[in-house]
Length: 101
Image (cartoon, rainbow, N blue to C red; front, side, top):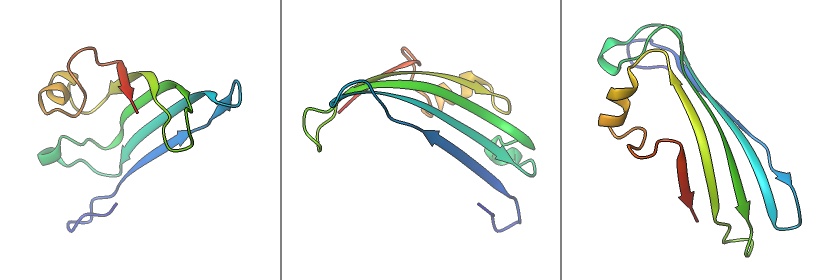
């Protein structure tokens, strides 16, 4: 992404479905945020800003409905984690479990 002031940033995501059975899958995920320049208004520093690594275990009941449970680890290099929780960017309790459908 390039802002109006010429600031460049990128978010790279990767995930892969490992089929354990026809319906049960394990999905490792990685997300990395980087920026070419510092933008203090948004709490973004130059270089590597954050890394998020996680894993989902899901079950496909149907092709359209596949609930999963997941855990992830977040490391922020630019912004204190307390700010990220207060801003609602990452959940408060517990920050490493999510259930979705």
